[in-house]
Length: 378
Image (cartoon, rainbow, N blue to C red; front, side):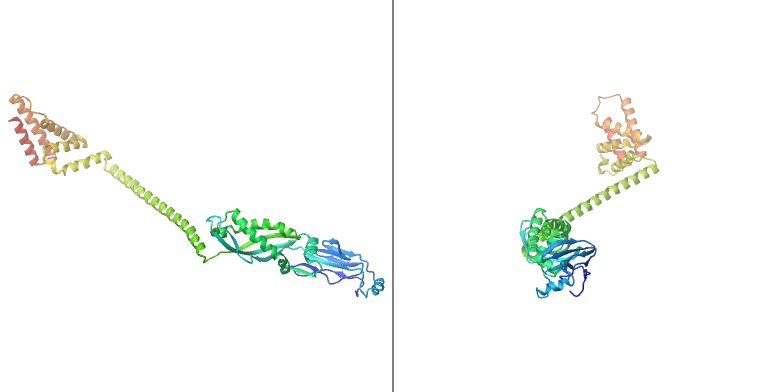
């Protein structure tokens, strides 16, 4: 105690939680300076008396200059009025690492098989209750840093964290194969559970992050369920892709039909005929190619159908064919007068002549039909 009045302050690094000033048993009127983000606790005679926030303070002790020296002689030059100051850093200290010391065993909630995992991450801490932390953990030690604080918390932290990991995985039904996409909510859930545990020691757990989940890669059972899990997604994706491909193909084919129909409609409009007329032309072409056209009855059916082609020629041809058909199909009529039979014969031959001139029947077919008519009248 060389100085009459001391100036007590702390300007250390932020990795420190609590620091005891080396100056003890200082005189009354000593100046205490507390910076922002700090608190100071004044101890006298073993009791934590006052808690000081940011500012400048004058400390009053029972140590009085000059007189104190006389009193100290009776105690071997040691002041009987013991006093000291502890500084507490209130800043949030981040990047405090943590990790499980052994695997967490639990039953995987999705597939129901036993599983062992590890976890690690970071957390940020801040002193919430300076007096509680100092009395419960620091005691009479001179210093408390990050590593020492984590060392104090390690035993209960490992026990709590492993229990909470298993609880959250089960209650939230988190699939081990999808854990990485749930790390944020997983961290938040464990953070909420750990807050009261740290608060018991006057420490606020500001943030808690699970950054790594150590999975049992290589374990046969784990690898088996891992393959099954990802295969189902691959099969679903493949089925969806196939469905989309088929749909695209069907839409393409339908579009082709629409385009072709539009092209055909444009062609008909330009050439001046309708779809019904086009179908009539197709029927006429098929009739012309009919191998049985030489047979009178078949020819009659074909040409009767062709009569719907339309136009003046179509009407005449249709009437002629129908007349010839009726003549061939009707049973022989009672004997008629020769004049009448000859008139009917001439009319039918004229109709057949029109069909031949129109190109609907050949010369051979015309001759065959005419011979058939002759048989009926002879």
